[in-house]
Image 1 (cartoon, rainbow, N blue to C red):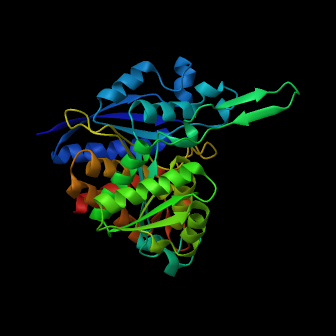
Image 2 (spheres, helix red, strand yellow; image 1 turned 90 degrees about the vertical axis):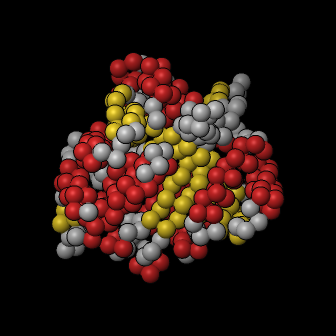
Image 3 (cartoon, rainbow, N blue to C red; image 1 turned 90 degrees about the horizontal axis):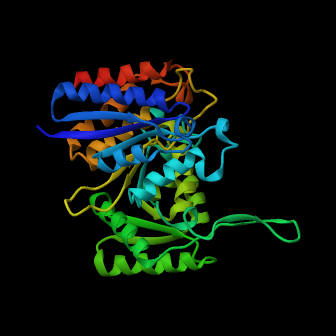
Length: 367
């Protein structure tokens, strides 16, 4: 029997509440014995700053490096608005991505049939939606240097963020996206701003070359990022796999999230390159934030975090059957009208965070 080690970083706000439901799903899987999952908890985000003066401690990072996978809840909140910039809660998330080399962020946007009417768009626009957004995660404007906020001699303030990409960074994220397209519908769209940005020019050239030389069987198209945002709202089902850079991926994946009915529905996987032993560093997290306005009320939607564990089963633990079970359990619970507040619809049953977890586990038990 295989044993896997998972580091759980619940984080801030609703993070501990949704992570509690993931722990219950893991405990349920452990009773079925396809594998044994050992879990360890630690701190990341504002809670880590409160405890250690850093958004993530060196000790927690050491655990992340040795774990088979990291599952993160959410970080941040207004409580930490005044902390130094390099110690803000989000700095812990960025350090995890950078130090683990997690360059490929996978964000599926799937509209479960029972939630087609929960979307802000018409049912016919979103019903059956299944998009995979592949976001470059360790380059671009979030990490480029110089990055500064300075006061000029005139007394005026000036801020600088640098968008920078090297060819190899684009090549590796492009290959990840092409490989996913091979396993899905054979179509890949690449989004950038080659009309006004030199990084966009290099992005388009590089993705085109990789597609032409290595993946000629994949149908590749290019779209400007602003037009892509519009197309996601106008006709999202035209996309299958969508690859883009760090900044545009952040924005476009949030746009896609609302097609599904709620940010609380979107999981994500962040993957690195395999090491010499074939081990791939990985972190899984919901796309939603810490939602401090509802923290502690027991009303948060745990589906995105549970589905993130499902992605871990698929991409790290090579347990696709169990990953499919979790996806089916979520869909079945929704089909029975179980809803948290963020996806509540008329005639449905509104439940708490824990009760949504109960409903999903009950469906798992029925399979």
